[in-house]
Figure 1: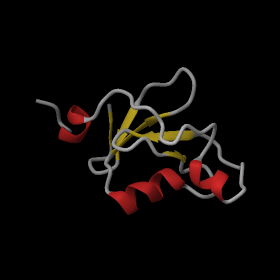
Figure 2 (figure 1 turned 60 degrees about the vertical axis):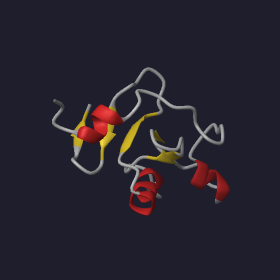
Figure 3 (figure 1 turned 90 degrees about the horizontal axis):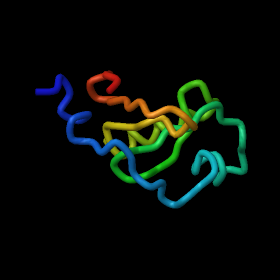
Figure 4 (figure 1 turned 180 degrees about the vertical axis):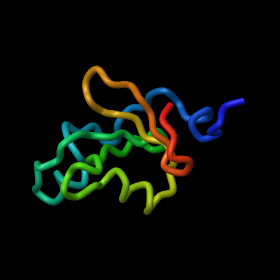
Length: 88
């Protein structure tokens, strides 16, 4: 059994909704200053990482309680569980 039931239950990938070429929240604010992008594996929200000024991926977790994200950067496929603070 996995040490993190959220990572075990989450898909490896999901289509971003709506399809965007950056952080959905930053783009809605007219910003393009994100550093890296993260994809919510529950609903497909694309948000910016904690190194970005707005930290929208983490804000999305706090607002939605969707526990698992994955990197939305080319060549990266790691996943992170906010609840258990584990990478998978």
